[in-house]
Structures are given as structure tokens and as C-alpha cells.
Image (cartoon, rainbow, N blue to C red; front, side, top):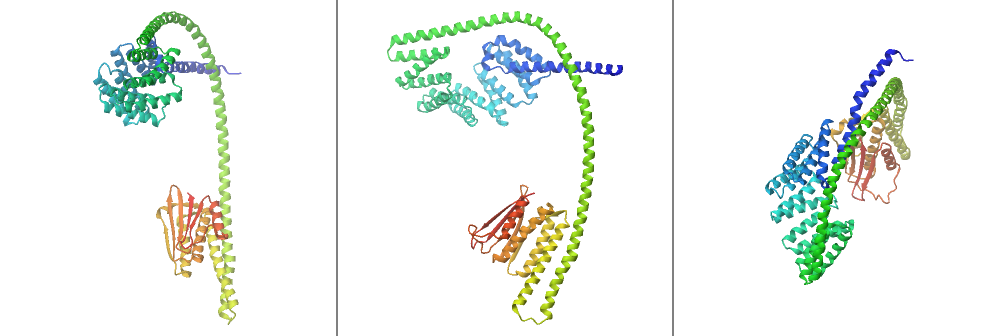
Length: 592
């Protein structure tokens, strides 16, 4: 059973948790609501701006209360957009500037660039000079920081401003910049708009031969995407071009298609434009009756558009009043829900507290287990060090035995051979040859034995050790091959490299074997050994100017086979380049 003092402590902790965790649970719900509102589509925002505006103002306040800066500045930007569509331009600019200041504090460059450009574009029919100034700020910011996404829209919109001022070259430049970016990032839905902008620009200048390819490219993309609405827009623009060129049959075919599709899909604005344009076609072809009928249809669609706007406004008012009633009901429900949430919160906090206590117990056990593991690891490390010391002592003992016993015996063999040669008058040339072979073999064996003893006595082999060993080998080779010039170049930067004993010995043996082959078989006059370090890889090149050999037909003996095998064992790569009468190049690559 719990002691009374322990119960009081638990109740105190639970109370603290209720106070601490409650705001965080509320914070998550509020943030989700703000994000959902800010992420409404553009069409949803501008459909009922008057109805949505109070919600964005509320979102601004809620975001400020929970210190959610990004959500607050996005809500300011969206409120600015709604004020623009409500015709309240002073408030539009005021809210946009607050959003810009907030995005600057957050260092959100994408939103800054986008919003500077958006303010400029909205201002184009009120103050073209100021519109251009805002737009230039957005473009400079986006270009400086290479913000590709905002630049796609900024270039297109700035091109519109230049087109309004009849600055055709500038408009063409910025439309082209926008198209280039969209093509690079494969913005299939945005590319046709840039193409239409360029085509429309040439159409205004009556450069029909330049305008037409852009319209046709836009149409091809929209056909592949199945974008019916976009096709209607493109066909209307292209039919206008055909009318200007007096290509009446082509214009009529496109207009008939747009009339049919726009009527079927109830695209009221497009249907009205198509009927008006086709009425003009009938009038040019002196078909007064048909022209009058299309004009009537255009007027009918205009009336339907007006009725739709009226219905939308009525619906907006109805929604507004229904919202007031619903808010009363929601307020009553909110009280009930708040009470229920309080109990749920208390239950959640109790569960959280129990989980926390369980976690603390589990954490304590983990710390205990970790301490035991660390003690075991320490004992294991000490045992490993002792084992390594024993192995090192054993290696030293073995190397001493090799040196004192086998080395002495080999030296005795050489001495005995020399005594036989010079102590007795031997005339048998075959016997003398065999004695020379025995002496030479014993000397080579002693040298190999010394190399083995050298490797056994090393924990690690440095590049400096390897260099010294190879220099010694080459100096001995020079005594028997004085006609060969050796060029030995170990870069100083490689001297800090350290290898394991196994890697160092294998590397030494490979280079030694390559040098031995070059001396014995290549008939070379120059042998080069060069090491370099590049991208954490050691490169060793052994190159001679000897007779070389044919890689396709050569029978690889034990020497070359052992070289490859040794290189594979230490994780490296060996490559042989040679041609008959053009020397041999052996390249070693080893990760370090």
C-alpha cells in the first residue's frame, strides 16, 4: 500500500500535468484549424470573400495567442487577398504589408517574393508605376536567392505589366523566362499559360506567323492532359487569330467545338465568349439570321452569369444568417463538449502520469542494465588487451627463434657453400652452378625471413616503414641490375598513412613482386614507382619501358596471380596495362 505522503505527491504531480499539458492539446487543434483555413484553394477563397474574411481575422488572433508565427502571417496574406476582391484596396495593402514584415522576421524568402509580386499584379489597373515597383522587388529577391517556384509566376505576371505598356520586347523576355523555368521543372499545367501569353503578345502585334506555333503547342499539351477548359480558352484565342487572317473555315471549326463543349459543361463565361465570337463570324459571312441567334445565346449566357452572381450573393446572405444561428447552437454545444473534454483531459493526464511513472521505472532499470553492460564491456576490453599483450610477446618470441635458429642455419648453409667453392678445387661446372643456386636461394630466403620478422614485430606499418623497406629492396636490386635506372617517388603527404600489419605486408609483397618481374623479365632500362593520395584512396604505379606482353594471350603465372589475390584480400584493386614493345604499367588502388 502507498504511504499517505506518496499519495499527496502523486496528486500534486497530476495537478501539475493538467495545467502543463492542457494548453498543448488545445494548441494542436488550433494549429490544425489555422492550417486548414490557410490552405483553402484560390477558387474557394475568392468565391465568397465576405463570408470568409471574419474567419481569417479570427485565425490571425488564434495564431497570435498560440505563438504560431507562420500561420499568423499566412492568414494576414489571405485576408489581404479577400480585401482586394471586396474592393477595399487600402485594407488589402495594409494587411499585405503586415504579412510581408512577418515573413521577413521568419526569413521566409519564398512567401516574401511571392507576396511582393502579388501586390504588384493586383495594383496593375490602379497604379501601374507602383505595380511595377512592387513586382521588381519580388523578382530581385527571387533571383538573388534562386527561388524557382515564385519566379515562374513572377516572370509571367511581370510580362503582363510590360504588355499593358506595349513594351513588346520586355514582355516577350519575361514570358520566355517564365516558360523556360516551367519547362525545366516540367510544370505541365503552367506551360500552356506561358505559351498562350507569348502567342497573345504576337497576336496583338499582328505577327500571326509567330503567334500560331505557340497556340498550337499549348493546345497539344492541353489535349494530352485532357484539360477541356484550357482547350476552350486556347481554341478561342486561336480562332481569333484565324479570323484576323481571314481563314474563316478554320475559325468556324474551332468556334463550333467551343460552343458545343462550353454549353455541355455549363462553362458560362466561355460559352458567352464563344457565341459572341461566332456571331461575329456569321456577320462577316453575311449570315444575319445565324449571327442574331448566336447573339441571343450570348445574351442568355450573360443573363445566366448575372443570375448566378445574384444567387451566389443570396446564398452568401443565407449562409451568413444560418451561420449566426449555428454559432449559437455551437456555443451551447461547445459548453457541453468543453465539460466532456475536461473529463477526457483529466483521464488522459492520469493515463499520461501512469505512463510517466512507468517510464521512469523502466528508465531506471535501463540505466542499471547499461551500467552492468558497461562494466562487462570494460572487463572484456581489459581481457582483450591482456590477450593482445600475450600475443605480442608470443610474436616476439617466435621472431627471435626464427632469427636465431633458422636464420643462423641459413647463414651456415651459405658459409658452407662458400667454403666448398673456395676450399676445394672444384672443376665440375654443373656442381658449381648448383652450389651457386643453393647460396642464392639461401640469401633470398634470409631476406624473405627478415621481411617476415619485420612484419611480425609490427602492430602497424606506416607509409614511412614501407618506403624504407622498398628503398632497401631497390638498392639491393641495383647491385645486380646496374643497367636499370630506378625512379622512386613516395610523396611526403603520404608519410602519415598507417596500415595494419597484414595490409602493409601484402602491399609490400605486391610492389616487390612487380619490381622483381620488371627486373627479371621486362628487359627494361627504366623503372618508376610513384605513389599518390586522392579522394581517400592510395594509388601506386609501377611502370617500366620494357618489352611488355600481350594481355589477351599471356599465361598468368603464380606471381601475377598472387599479386591479384593479395590485393583482393586487403580490399584493393589491381590493374595491368601493357602492350608488346610498349612497356608495362601496374596500377594499385587501395582505400585508406
